[in-house]
Length: 60
Image 1 (spheres, rainbow, N blue to C red):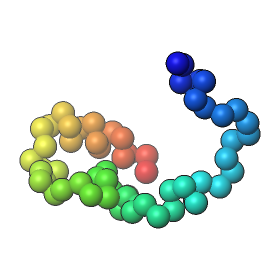
Image 2: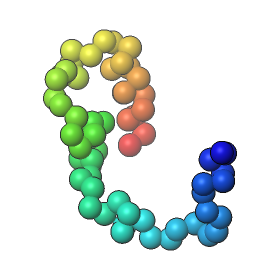
Image 3: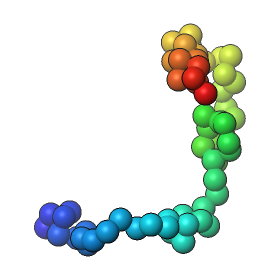
């Protein structure tokens, strides 16, 4: 069975709040998810990771 056989066809769902509204939300402005553990301080990340994060957040 193909995945397309399982999906229904039709217009996109306009309001996803009923589907996702009860879920905990990620902290605003954070790179971590809602239940990520604080197990590695940013300054302990490898230089390449800090460089990548800096590049990704430079325009925000």
